[in-house]
Structure formats: C-alpha cells, structure tokens
Image 1 (tube, rainbow, N blue to C red):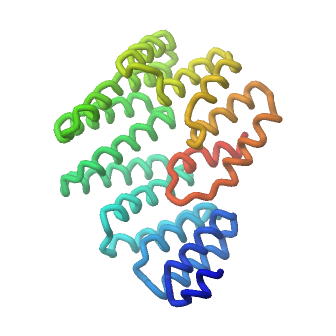
Image 2: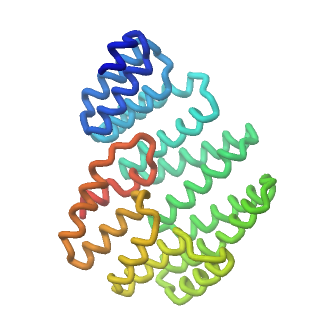
Image 3: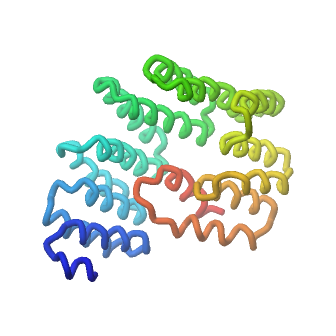
Length: 280
C-alpha cells in the first residue's frame, strides 16, 4: 500500500499488490487489483496471467482461459511467451482436463518448431511426458520421450544435456514398467538409471518411493520422499499420500494444509496435485 501511495500511476505497484492478495487467498480482491492494472496497461501479460490464476483458484477456469486468450494478440518477450503456454496448460490441468492440457503442450511444441526455439521445444515436450506419466499413460509418455530425445540429440550443443536426455530413457522405461505392474523390470531399469546418472537424484528417489508404496513399505517410502526436494509440491503431495496410506493423519494434515494454502501463478506441479490433495 505504501508502494502504491508513492507511485499511484505505476501499474507495477498495483500488480505487486494483486500478487500478494492472490498468495493470501484473497482472490476476488486480487482480481479487482489486476483489473486496475489492466485499466492502466491493457496489454499487461502478467496481469492477465495473474487474473487467470485467481480464476483457476476460484474454479472459474473457462473465464481464466478467456483472459489468457488475450495474450495471443499481444507482442510478448520470450520469457512471457513461455509463461503464456504454462498458464494455458495449468488452467486445464487444474480443472482435470488432461487431454486439453496435452493438446496445449503439443501446440506449444509445434509453434516452437517453426521458430526453432530449443528452450520451448525442450520444456514443452518434457512437461507433456511428465503429465502423461502422472495420469498413468506410460506407453504414450515413453513414445513422447523418444521424440523429445531425438530433438535434444539433434539440436542441443551441450554434451551434458544430451547425456542427461539419453539417460532418461532408463528412467522412463522404469516408470512405464511400474505403471504396467512389472515391478521387477521397473527396479532393474531404475538401478541402471542410477548407475548411468552416477548417483540417486530426485527422479530416482521419487520413483523408488512409488515402488515402495506399491509394496506397502510405507516407512521406507516416507524416508525416500523426505530425501527429495521438499520445495517441490509434487514431492510434498506424495509424502502426504503415503502418510495417509500409513493412516497417520497427524502427519498428513499439515502437509495437505500447506499444499492447499499455496496460491502460486503458473505452477504446473501445484495444478497436478491440488485436486488430489483435497481428496486426501
């Protein structure tokens, strides 16, 4: 409020306040503040994305996407363009419309091909792969992985990026095997992946925890998940989930409360787990 009083004609001041209101869960107030920004600067991409995020949290996804549609007629920086696609994907994922979210990521990939934009080629396809595995479509995810790896090997100039992408074949084969119920193959591919990687990482610990959960070895699964990056809401959700399976409500409740209190714009992992967290 002090910022606004000092610079009452600055859209940035109102945008900052709108973001703080959203993070506080005061969505209607935040929308009004973003509308104030748009009255001052009608082509503000961050105000449009902020307004859409609030509408997502209010369950008004179609209205949010109407705001995002305006981004298509605005000249955006590369950074803003990347976030436009994330915002569109998040809206569908948060609503549970996974096929539509996948279509957005495929469209982003096609547009990136026309621009030869490696960053968007890389991340649009990788997000699609992870979405498909999350919703249990392992074969489709593995097929998309092979397309992604071809792009990385053909277009990247960084040997470490090429190696990391190639090594992920083992990880996604392990994940696909797990989804088919073939736990022995999943463990074998996962061990190969960790050897190729040189050490366990967040991906291998996460998938290892899913294998432990499938075996009802909840205590070990909890330890595996605690070793992952706990700033990632996806890892927080699965930790809450295993505590719930272990019938430990005292441990589950604060984790779920933390997830549901998160009000971040353009956070795809939050969109993936928010609906599921409410059911826990």
